[in-house]
Image (cartoon, rainbow, N blue to C red; front, side, top):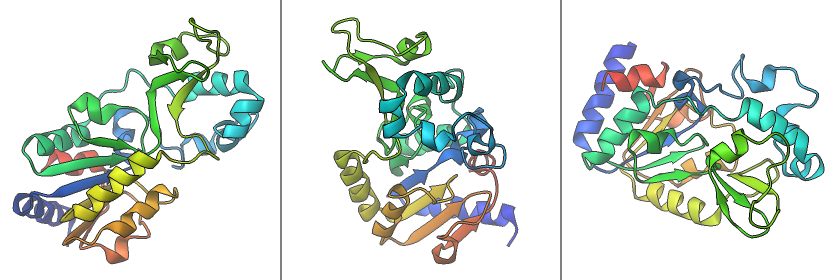
Amino acid sequence: MDTQNKINELKEIIEKYDNIVFFGGAGVSTESGIPDFRSVDGLYHQKYDYPPETILSHSFYRRNTAEFYRFYRDKMLYLDARPNAAHEKLAQLEAEGKLKAVITQNIDGLHQAAGSKTVYELHGSVLRNYCEDCGAFYPVDTIKDSTDVPRCTKCGGGIKPDVVLYEEGLDDRTIRDAILAIQAADVLIIGGTSLAVYPAASLIDYFKGDKLVVINMAPTPRDQYADLVIQAPIGEVFRQL
């Protein structure tokens, strides 16, 4: 079956069902200009004094906070990015009552910017930042405009982004809510993710519904279990729905 016929089949699934959940990854945001870490041209294939996976770890953040922030400001903040067709269609489907939740591994806030309300951010968000001592909230501009380690203006404590670093656990409540949404779904659409990042990818195991759809440029470990697999840019697919 060619791609167009598969997109038409996805249209029919969306028309038929009113209990859909979307599980997405970096590929959802690449068409908004945010690079995929693991793509050929992604951050993991660029050259730095340390590998990005090392810099974005909890232990590196504690040991070398200034270097962490130099990398973070340079490579993790894409504040000019705007939602693309995938974000916008998902928000529309939610407004129509068909989509019950977006579960995302992304930290860019673009689903909310497009209008999605029920969004479970498995890895947090660059838009939220907190003082580690007093808990005061700081917007992303505080991080962007800092030149060294950002400090709380109230108590002088260090400010940490509300993102899940390597070696850190996912938020229990977010995981629980995501699992409940997946368990209750009749349709699960997986999009823009290689399903290589755990434990996030393991949440798919909780799906027991009718239709599993995978939309990704490259094959994933779940393709063999899917009712429909579309290998195409996700924005291109959603633009036609």
